[in-house]
Image (cartoon, rainbow, N blue to C red; front, side):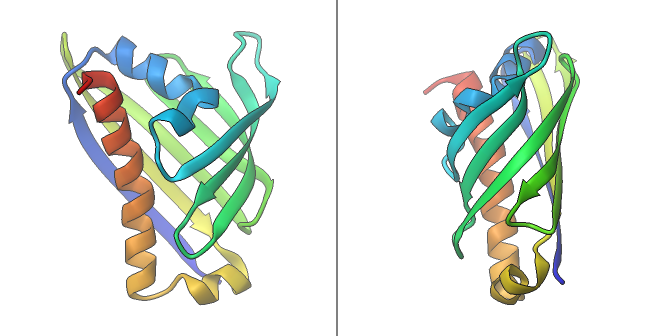
Length: 149
């Protein structure tokens, strides 16, 4: 059993509304989050947002597939929990805080139990690299997408 817990913060030169539009469009996340290979929406909520989404991510030691259930608190946070997948369990969260009209603090956090088999691959320096890849990729991707080139 290997519990992975990681969090990364970034300040984005964009409004909280812009950041929210980007993160809540889960189906298009692979366009700006490099480690996410696919995001297939299986069910939507009453607002048309992805509620149940099958995601395949490149965790560098191997590809990981998870069916995630998403919950939304518009313009403030989005959470997800694995309902089926390669991890024993997985939860995550985006939190957004408006610091100024066009400045948003975004916090991306993940916690997972990789299980026995994947846990053997993800330990020591490899674990730190995987945590960095997954969180940095998400926050850097959001910043680049929101601020533009």
